[in-house]
Length: 396
Ligand code: C5P
Image 1: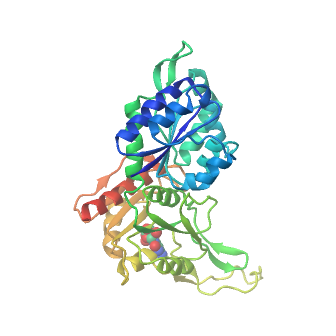
Image 2: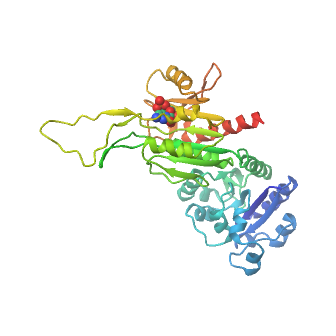
Image 3: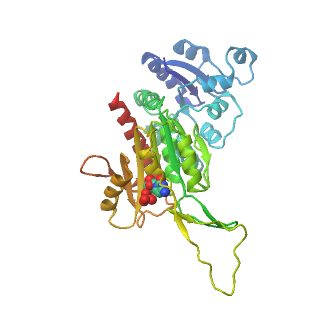
């Protein structure tokens, strides 16, 4: 039975969480209720306990509750967390990583997907502070349902009402389905640039930020996959639940990738440097009267091609192609040449490295490619992850 942690914030809409609890249970979920101190001003723990068929957890250091199930265990055992209503205060504390009561501690300790159903006065919702907190949480992968427009308890009208019970429950069900779509699948993702040393202070590299690869690793992990992310040097934090292996050079990246096999899927997003200096100088190259030094280059291993052709080949191998001209023709040839299953090609003369948006053409074994609309790199990651989940769903 899927386990949902239902956290009630303190707002007038808290009474509606009783219906959410009832409906989640009716859909076959095990609902563990958690209340903030403020929530108890609006709803009695007893009502919630009766509807959930489970004791309310409300205190961080209450010995009786801790001895039953410790708060970390409570956070870790959930398959999804639903916060209803999510107040401005609760979201602000989440966005800043505070853990000053049981609810915020659980929200910080869990790695289950989180759904927030905000409800508050329209001005509180529209306040830049709340707006920034919502954006921060969305960037971390927290999902939102509502708020919706309408009349509020305070008499004002605008966006701030709790979403309908039905839509909150629907989103919770989706979240649970999503969190297991790739469970049991092992995925390897490469991201970022590689850095090929010339001497102890200089190197050959490129502008790759790692944003797209990291977003893909995050989306796949959110679908329940066990993800190894082999990353070149980037300034990004590791997505939750992802195992990260940091490398510098293409050779190191290749070794780390082969070490991560067997895997069901490999998604090669890294902008691997095609060449490296044939020999590295032990000391910093000096300027001389003879002019600049000649640096002789040798080819790096092609990791995507290696993974596509090795004996432990993942079932699905996906590559990316950054092109500056004849994007589609080059991409089609590249998919054939490297032997990968899918190839996503983008025009980097339009969508530069480091930007937050991307637009790709998707090539598979079908004759016609698909042109995906321009979107945020996170949205593209979600779409690709869903596509990978659908591929495996169709193959069982
Ligand atoms: O040949 P090109 O660099 O355009 O190919 C891009 C695709 O190949 C990307 O998926 C990239 O991660 C992968 N690649 C690789 N190893 C290389 C070069 C590219 O895995 N040495």
